[in-house]
Amino acid sequence: MISPTPQAPVRRPTAADGFVVVDKPQGWTSHDVVGRMRRLAGTRKVGHAGTLDPMATGVLVLGIGKATRLLTYVVGADKDYDATIRLGITTTTDDAEGDVMSVAGPGTVEQVDRAALDAAVADLTGDILQVPTSVSAIKVDGKRAYARVRAGEEVALQARPVTVSRFDVLDVRTATAAVPDVDPAGTYVEDPAGGHPDAEPGVAPTLAEPGDHPTRDVPAVDVDVRVTVSSGTYVRALARDLGAALGTGGHLTMLRRTRVGGYDLAGARTLEQLEAQADADGTLATLPMAEAARGTFPVRELDEVEVRALGYGQWVEPSGRPEVVAALSPSGTLVALLEDTRRRGEDLAKPVLVLAPAG
Image 1 (tube, rainbow, N blue to C red):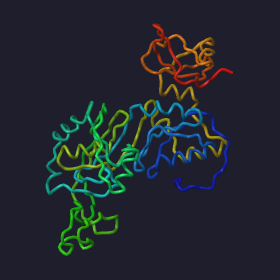
Image 2 (image 1 turned 135 degrees about the vertical axis):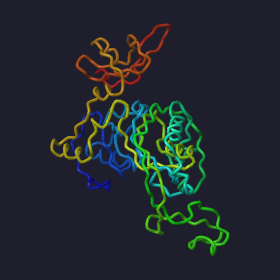
Image 3 (image 1 turned 180 degrees about the vertical axis):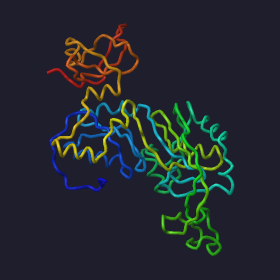
Image 4 (image 1 turned 90 degrees about the vertical axis):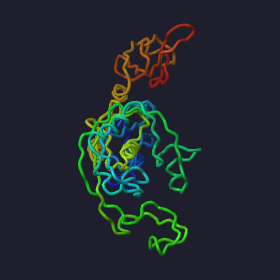
């Protein structure tokens, strides 16, 4: 597998403006992928449409060149995920990369039945208010929440409205999980002699890193789910809230994004495939701007008069749609993004972004 470790840069011919849909590997940050794509595309003008955590895999949409200006619209699209939620254990990050915070009491997990699970899932489906996970990229007074948490600060994020339009349970199975054989509560230690052997007076024991302490096996339940969510929804928070509703605690152990708006895994390529293609052809292949737009917006076909007018930033006849539309020339070039509005009592379509200026 390709490593995210930086390598000596090799200057390639600049790729054409367009999208590249990557099947992100586990262990890579979205920034790692952007860095690799800059090298493959021969340009620093590369951006992505929505962060995927390092643990997660799947669809990451990247824009090259002028196509970066379309990414803001892709970010707001709904998304599909396959995930595994582990009931019985909570972690500091609401996923498997965090430290264990709590373990369900004896018999708690075993008492969860399918009816209770389905009821809790139903309560988390539809329009809900969700408190984002504290280890997130949301800014609090100008600083990322995850940075504040890592600095030891308490972070309390406000609930925000999100939509979970699908929350399907695919499989439920019993599991055994290894957790550090230490008190995960992190409580104040009055007397270290009677508490954790590594503790000092007044200092809570630090949660164990893998291999630092013995582990013990605890019962758990793994729930495979498939969800469709609006932009801004945290699947990790769904795992946390499902566990809380069932009284077991919960966290995410697997997350794979299978779709972002009009882009899915069928059109995604691995980094190995992208590198092999760029090596073989000399230039990274991209999804052309017009095709990229078709995956994100309704399309309006223009005539030559409209193409010229839009090239000068002029308004044209309305599209008759409430959302932003992609306006294509007779030759198939993406000319502009249009939005219907009223000006001086007249319905017109104004260009919100001109991608093929006149001249």
